[in-house]
Length: 171
Image (cartoon, rainbow, N blue to C red; front, side):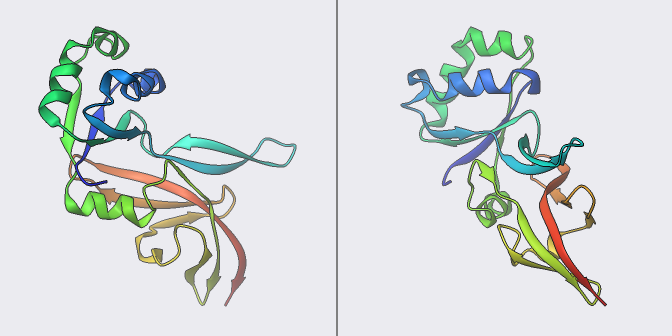
């Protein structure tokens, strides 16, 4: 992502707004737009099932070709304005550290689960996108198979989580 921005919108209609942004209407001013999602295992009594959930609700990440053209088209698009409950859409420029964070996870639309071990009280990720990023993990919920991060984006601070299954624990 070279010219990265994020737009804050009503999370209830984010998939509809994303469809509009990915349509031909915006194809000449956007390279791509996506909602950052992650895979998560959930147990509903019948065993663990894989689900896809938002990492940060209400934000669409965009790679802009022509910012001025994008802003003009966005301001003229009544459908997005109505889907956003007639609220102003906030646009934030992603800074270098934000782009670096996204690139750590290869900026894929859906972030895969990771697996790892706890060795001598420290988390060691053996495979998956969290491998090499253990220092960012603030907390692990072994029962829900989640790793929690506190990340400071240039536009706000967020508690975000990714899938992490701890296979072994050794003292």
